[in-house]
Image 1 (cartoon, rainbow, N blue to C red):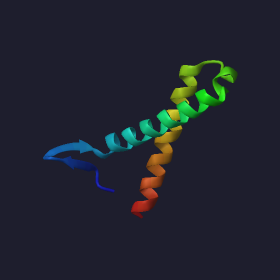
Image 2 (cartoon, one colour):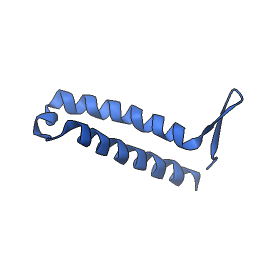
Image 3 (tube, one colour):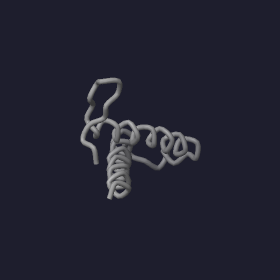
Length: 69
């Protein structure tokens, strides 16, 4: 995998792109969980959202790494 993203001559780390993708996935998942009322069952919403973000970031990394191989 290319370690850098070139956006109009500005080099950004590849992890930044994966973090943005994971954040977009998290926004959709949070919206679905809010609409279904799942957050009523969660003790600490912020920690739960952090865990979801870490899972989304790991999944994004694994998916992109698997596509590159």
